[in-house]
Image (cartoon, rainbow, N blue to C red):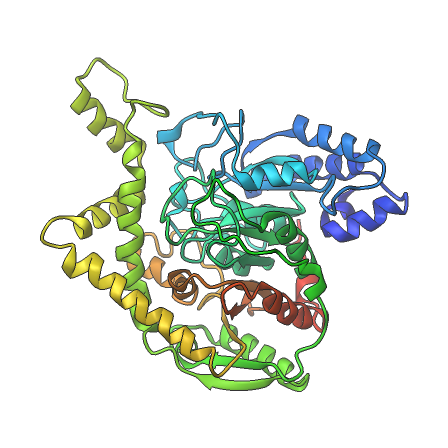
Length: 484
């Protein structure tokens, strides 16, 4: 049973089709795995074993599978609405809120037959890089429980890495899929902004948020993207473009591809183990016929301050709806409306959420809008132009996913700026709306995973998957599993 929890979706499907196991057995194996490791990892906010068993039984009795994900046990980050299932964003202010509707991605996965195991822990309202900002509890890295799993999709990444789920969904506003994927040694993709519907995703930064998969290998990533991608009339930012079969992009071939190595992503802030692993990957690509080109993205240094003006500004607007009146937590006691509103928000929000609301409210306030928010939007345009110029020289960019490997709990909580620097290499792609994927590319001397990031043009997910697949097929990093 335990071996089933190490396998990918496509490997499990092959076993089921060969009659060597069933989806009920696969689901029970994952539920048993959750029971055995969850006390140590703490990836899940809510588990839904009955729903998972029902979906697995249906997959076993439906005859020929109607989807490659039919019967596959998966999980959702707890900022994606699920009808009748608690959705908390790992925040006290939402309490035990059960949405009356489901996010489009949740509906599409349910329609594909996924066996939903539950909802995963996260930094509160997706604001954080370590899952230490969860308003409920912290999630631990399966490779070393003294280290963070990354964030804000830390619960989803840890669940996949620990064998508690075959795949999971995360959301990425400034790196919240790719950073935890790198820290936990799995694959994580942020699609192009507008490629996957955001309907039903609890908003943090509406011009930045994007949903994507966290998986054990690149093929599973393509399989999940086939279900997620596509136009949704319920999302005004969803792009009405045809969706290819992403599995058709999975071929080992980078000959003639021009791969950019951005100078600004290999600075002194990155650990030697990270730089060495990524440079080794670049050498691998070069050996297989790709051309490595040094490029410059000169406005990269401004991405962090730009992001921490724009994202909090959007958050201060999006989080205004949590007032104790309509749903979620309300401060107890007989108080007037103004006091109730103030106390509810004070008691319901955690310190990082409060910090970002204050930053955003200040940046949008009269007299400061032009100096901060407007200026940040202008620099955001310059960052996007840097990428546009890079695409005149190269087909993709290859960088570290994160400057470091996973750090210990408490190492950066006293210094928010140091925590924010974790997203230095991921934020620019969100600002530009570009797709990017993180794949495992090595380990540090301490046995912690290193992530390789591949960035592409708008809607070039196929190219990213081809590059990532070529690398994965020639290495064994993605097969490593944490012990215990």
